[in-house]
Image 1: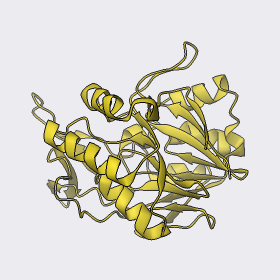
Image 2 (image 1 turned 135 degrees about the vertical axis):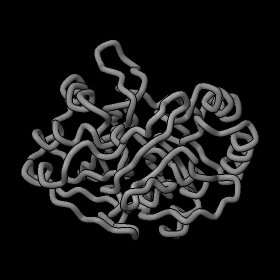
Image 3 (image 1 turned 90 degrees about the vertical axis):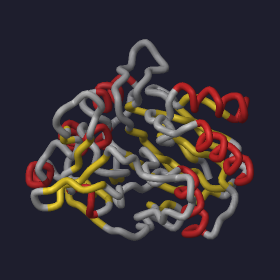
Length: 278
């Protein structure tokens, strides 16, 4: 089995002819099936698809890792290219999501910047599930990820609207895409809000495969303290990850530490990156 990935949106650009944009979108192709994990924040996914000779009309399904705007803001423009297409996600993607930032008096809305009716008019139809969704015998979404690792916690500055009140967002909608390849698991992350190691543990549980060959995408270590980063490194080594391509919400410090520890197994997965596994 061959797994191909093209990163269409990411905070940084790996080529002079692609746009960088805060967010993430990764095209995944396995045995002829083309899936798009997330759609970035705005125009970069569509722009970079043209530059990278990616025909979005050939995408057969969209998987949303969670309902934040930097992963869903490109939906309108992507749907204008794909036409009618299934979107696989957790039901909580439509929750009203907010962030509290230092120095800002009011909370900022960071949820999906569209109404579902508009996306439906553009051809989207949704398959919403809290549970893993098997897209093929070898490709599955994690669905809601159990929080079992003590040092992995949800950011305390993220909120969701409950009636007239804002309450802490458990990010139940955070999920990853897992490919059960014959050389080990390939785990494609959106943001890993519920924890990188939590995600990997659950991916192994739902697939019945212990070997994790590759991790690609956002690790949400950009707010992690040094202790959490070191414990994450120790757990990644114990799991035996062979390729680690980080994106988006990882941070310079965490990326540098991961690069030190994983050497040739590590790379920065930025906009324009093409990867064929194994």
